[in-house]
Amino acid sequence: MVGSGAVPAGTVLPTVRQLALHLGVSRLTAHRAYQELQRIGIVTAKTRRGTIVCPIFEEEVGLDRLVSFLKTGPFPEFERICERTNVRSMASPVPDPRLFDSDEYLASMGVLRDRGTWGYYYPDSVSDPVLSAAFCQFAGPFGLDFSTEHTITMGGVQPWFPALLGALVPEGSTVLIQEPHTLNPTTAYTFRGFDPVGVTAGDDGLDVEHLTTQCKRFRPAALVAQPNFGFADGIRWTDQNRRDVAEVLQHYGVKLIERTALSILAFDGERPGLVSNLMPEDLGYAEFGFQACLAPGLPVSFANVRGADRQTLVQNVAKLGLTLPKPERLTCTEFIKRGALGSNVQRTTRELRTRRDALVRALESSLPDSCHCAVPQGGLSACVVLPRKLDPEDLFRRALDKRIAVMPGRYLSSEGSGDDRVVLSYSMIRAPALEEAGAVFGRLVRSLL
Image (cartoon, rainbow, N blue to C red):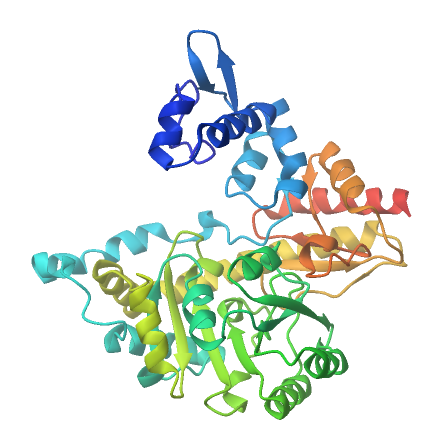
């Protein structure tokens, strides 16, 4: 709440006793929490005044917070702290909210007036045929052949995780994850009661030999993957790789949960179909979320569920309170129908392609020849493979000293490997600053190697 600005600097926080009573925890727990907040510079304790919120975006405190990032895990104000402390962030593949056409989205809300107060009544069900049809028509040209009758709408941030995975995979099951992935999903999977195991991906797609080995060894229940532009590498699986992966999963009876949001951010115009549709209905599932590709705060998602599990997922969505509110359904439908979403995607893709080109130019001219960086075909970030391992924390600190935040590969692996790679996101920085930052980082890597 402090990081988001909901609790501003100078606010006097509740006493330890008040906080413990409010949260239903012991006073010792509340006291230790305040001690930790004070240690990392978020609050200060004043005699007779109490615990007071510090201006955490001050440069010195902000940089300390960024340094602690690797030990404490992701926090939602990371990008905001980077911006306030003049750090160019290439650490997390977050869609730039400045690229979202909020004016058109607000204009689309005009449809609510036509519905009167009934637009704010309870949603009819988790299946919204009108919104599903609009989305499927929009997504089809991108190779996302979701069908209206099989599409379920969901609300909330990353709802596929508790709803889709929770409905399809028994608690305690092993779940394979495409690597490199986004930061620390391992923690999230473990917290939800799943056992995460990585499967490596390369320039051509998922490592089929490694996938086969992991299937034989762990007998997993599901694979979660991004065939189009993994969040960490921006690479699209080849057609042959898609067929091979589908064949292996079908052979071992492993379900595929295909994340497709970045598919609409393709730089070359190619539109391969869903890998999940190459599999039997009870093994292939796909998910799409606008918050992963257009705006982090746009909680509108869709799941393509063709088999008998559909009713289980419907019940799960309702039980978890992930039913998309009716005003958001109506607004999103209007946003798509009036063509605003399509034009937003086109504009966003053009800008991201410009940013990608700026980063690639900088890396090609500054990195040593021993490094490898496959040019991203879409998405939000690129993966640089180094000739040898580097200390991830040392690399992060050295880059931060040069006002650049990067993401060491170790934190994108379920096994803590990946010290021979770095992921650089180009989603949040404009091209000129990105080109400069890429050159600075390239020279840093050269000096360390």
